[in-house]
Image (tube, rainbow, N blue to C red; front, top):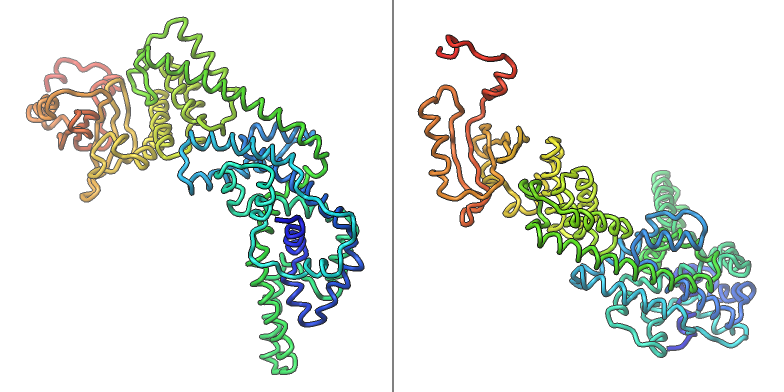
Length: 544
């Protein structure tokens, strides 16, 4: 693969050659080459150097984009000496890394390893010199290639073929750089940013536009719509001469619109999304290349902190019978002074790790469970909110939601607790439902305590309201035996207690998550609440 082929492909894209061809066919097919000869007076070597610099900037930007947004922000700020939009720092992660991982079925561990490999290899690529050319003007034949369509070949593929004559790349890294034309679009972005600062390039564009050989493809849709409106008006006015002229013009514009969509839409979209990368061109390439290894050192520190947190969490859970899922009895856990020191250490280490780092959600989940067992519900809530926000899959998100339900229950913030329980059930009903979800739809939380939680619910078919009492702990024995007292009480004092309707276990095999269902009596209060409100009964009233 030669430099010449890539130069043709890149410049052909930036000069909108497919559109120039359409418009030149109407006017003068030789005119574009004449205009380039007059204005685009770069030597082949100058253009090769522009491609080389753009390629290096692109590799640096992609390498940095494989890191966490927090790390990227620090990196960009050190270069620009200014605050950086967080969206820019997260763009590669959101638009490319996650989509690529999903397409290739990468697990969290595989994705972490891949990002590290890809970032390292992109740094190596940034230092390769792959574009070289003689210091001579472009020939007329070569200029003609710049305003001629070059076919459907991928710029990324052409560049990688040239790269791999010097450097062996991991197959998955090659696939990632080709994913949605990432490397090619990044190279073109930086090339355009460089060239638009050069008078010769701007003069070329202006000359093509003056001669009617270029249109602003960002406005082509609006231009087409305006021409259609004019054509309709001409038809209504029976201005047949103008109808013929506008009809030809509209046909040509629609052809340009189609070409713009197939040839240039992807690059235009990329340029808009990564517009903030423009700042990078204002920093000397040597400075950017020198800063990248420091970012890798920072990542090494993060990896060490992550391993240390995981070791602490495993040690604490093994010694206390805690788990990633919070249980009400966890708050009875007794922590030694040594364990409390370890918990504090793990919390401090986690603060040093970006919340978007791989594995952060799981660490925050487990540490949040441990912190909740101390009774520090506010700190646990903060950790679990981050775990929920950074969850990489529904399994983590459901667990974080259920843990937040438990934390808000302890704080008696029932509206938030109910919302998170509903989400946990929606994501994984078999694991997190506290009642027979297929029959009753929960409406709200009525209260909670040491034994369980009471819900107002509605029968899905009959629409009647009931009260469901869900129990935290595993109950042993048949449902009938366990809830015999409640049914017996209904027989003895049926007029004074809610009627029991059903009972059972969500997990019948393990007898876990037992529940008891009774009728709902609106505005009913229990005995303790009544006594608190009205005071003690006298003997006569009590007998009555």
